[in-house]
Amino acid sequence: MQANRWIDVRRFILACALGFAPIAAFATDIAQFKVAKGAVYLERGGKRFPAYVGTHLQATDTVVTGADGSAGITFIDNSLLSVGPNSVLQIERYAFNSTTHEGVFDTTLSRGTLSMVSGKIAKQSPDAVKVRTPSSILGVRGTEFLVRTSE
Amino acid sequence: MHGRYLGPLAALLVLGGCATSQDFVVLLPDKDGKVGKVLVHNPKGDTVLDSAYAAARTSGSGLQRNTASQSEVKEAFGSALTAMPPRPISFTLYFESGTDEFTEQSKQEIKRVIAEMARRQAPEITVIGHTDQVGPDPTNDALSLQRAERVKSILVGMGILPERILTAGRGRREPLVRTANGVSEPRNRRVEISVR
Image (cartoon, rainbow over all chains, first blue to last red; front, side, top):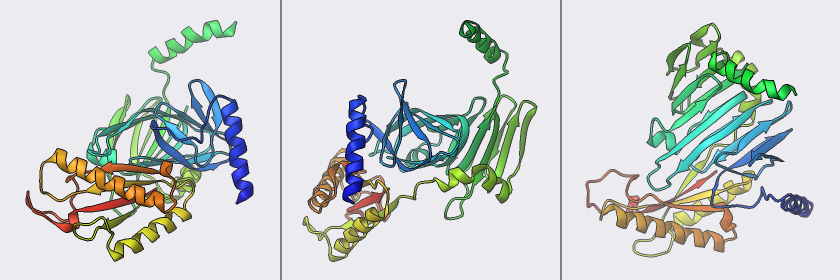
């Protein structure tokens, strides 16, 4: 337990030294990695960082996995998604009003595989959740579905 | 040097409609067996997936609509499905009438919340206040948020880190028991804790 905490602290200091604190929580956080296996990265502001269990995500972040990578993410409206190996998924837009459950959730899967369970946003507004691939647009009325895209 | 020519070339490809991806979309049954709906829009055609394992496949030649086999799903999506986060779970708390005190049953429920958090990786919770159908929306929204904030401070007092707790006031939009407007219903005056 103690050893684990030290690893976290070292990662945190390293992240801060790089000018980025992926473990710290901010009001703009919309989701969190719950699963991260193999090579998993988060791209924000043109920079790429390794992602871990507990790393927070913000709108417009991109998740990238390597050949051995997969990741599971839970959003604040209880939407769940995961990506398999060699995947690139960008969160284009995300907004959630926790009082009315109105919101918007647009993502683009440029490459790879996606599994999704839609949450409170889709339940409230049938047209608020969309997944794009390079050539398709999926309108998500609920609830569980899978997408693979390749060139 | 090459880079200077790639820009216009990429633009030509996009304009020419050649930037097509091969997509494979499968609708799964929900945990409780219900099936949702996904609309697939593609330059090669549109379709609606609304039955279990209904699948759409797109390629340069068109859009195909059929049913995916479980083995196909496992082969294509096994890694992603294995990485799915655990489902969020909800707990409901009630107060002794007219007090800040939880009912005896709700005290046990809080122990279950803490046990559920301990089972999860990077656990977070949203504390959601709900009201009955007495009074206007703005009043109920404020009241339900107040109730959620109060529960948050109790949970923080029990050792849960405040940064793991979001609060929400849902007002009277999600009654547990349907009642007419203006009806005071104790089962609707509750706080829900969603663990994710």
